[in-house]
Picture 1 (cartoon, rainbow, N blue to C red):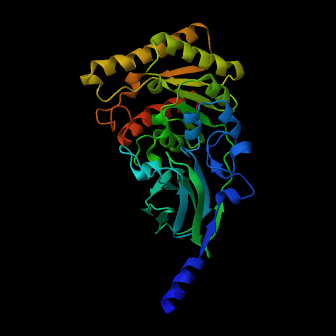
Picture 2: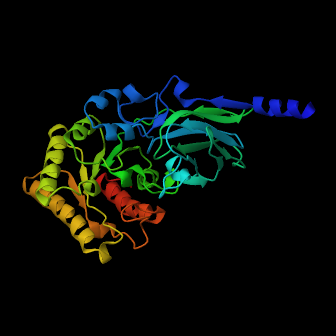
Picture 3: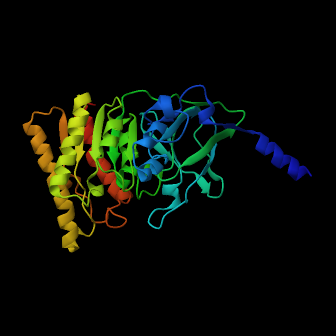
Amino acid sequence: MALVLVSVSAEAATRWVNPLKQDYYTVQNQAWENEIGKSFVRLPDRAEQSVRKPLWDLSRNSAGLSLNFVTDAPSVTVRYTVDGQHSMPHMSATGVTGVDMYRVNADGKEDYCFGSYSFGDTITYRYSGLPAGSGEYHLNLPLYNTVKWLEVGVPDTCSFRFLERNDAKPVVVYGTSIAQGACSSRPGMSWVNIVRRELGMPVVNLGFSGNGRLEPEMISLISEIDASLYLLDCMPNLTPKSEDEVYNLVLDAVHSLRAKHSTPILLVEHAGYSNAPTNAGQLALYERLNAGQRRAFEQLQSEGVPNLYYITHDEINMPADGWVDYVHPTDLGAQRQADVVAPRIRAILNMR
């Protein structure tokens, strides 16, 4: 009987806090907060009528979203449920469905916190041995799953407070599965999240696996966001398109955004395929797509379109072992892309 009483007491000693039940918005890196700020999704409900169903379904995934909080707790537990499969053949459960926690250090950088985890109907991450004193923590949410509910627990003798959403103008990334986070080993290692940590500013992840196609419906939605920079990285999902079709899609996307905003636009080329050196078809494929986008960029430059920038395939220079398969990056590949993208954004925005 004494053992049972101890167990009940230990459970009661944990205070659970739901970020969506605060009287302010807590979800970071999310656009349309007035419409979806009390959820872990990426597009507003009205978008369901304008975008294709596969894209809509992917917009329910929490890629790029995070929760920031301050606590003096020596241990933090996160528990939540999802409504999708925990893993994929080429992407682990920790990447598809896991969370990732970082602590902000004295220099303002984020230090990784390892948490033990268990995957079941309810997924649990436990972080223990945390530094003494109050600290700020950033919790990255799953890349490829839909969070149904989530709570953070700390000892009830400790302080805890979710931070309000950062309202600074975000970088908006529109792209493919690679932007969504495939195939990073954990959420913090997706290239978009690495860039966010490097810049120290909000980054909205609108990467949709197989569905980042420069469609006018999505460009229209993106143009609603008051951003500091728009990054378009859709070439890997345009494989059925001819060079001319890619050219026209890029022209239309940039013209549409520029009609509403003078915000910088950064176009990113296809990073290539792991087997391009050994497969002539794969080599020709990504070169065709990049040629179409490069022509569009040159045309836009000739038109005098301002604040337009470009990253080439050769600048990315993906390492030979930077892929999990033929196109999705490993953590090494994601880091490489971030190492190219983050400094370029910093330079465009004149950040120190």
